[in-house]
Image (cartoon, rainbow, N blue to C red; front, side, top):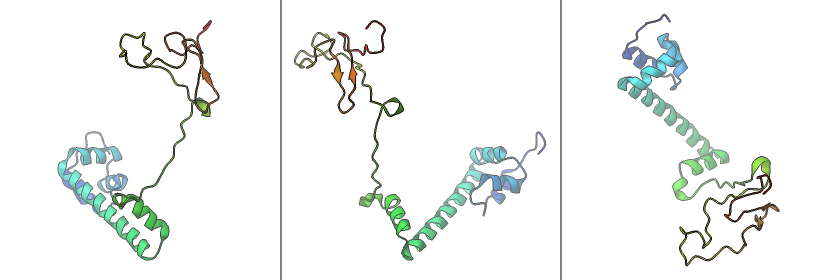
Length: 161
């Protein structure tokens, strides 16, 4: 492609059918770069509509193939369908996430606000912390302790603290 080459929207519209929505295929058919094809798809409403129609056509084809697999008794296809298209029926993939600190270590909790009664921004009816200022707090399940100063901030990494 030479600098300053201009294309017409119709060239892209004609190149889109049966491309599968693959921009590289569209660009090759037009004789331009991938980036040029992408720019025309984004900037030109008629090209964008033709592109979206092709993408939807391929999506329908994929769903048709999936339904055929389900009818043929493919359990993994059925599970996939249920966890995507039938989520509203309660078929969801359950995921569990374990949250850890750096390199899988203990999770470090840092106080952002001081909730003790001597803080003027805390309502007086709120109970004081059970830990006295300056004591280390045990983090549940971690075996680690966090040292605090009298403001409730972590002092474990400060020198002399």
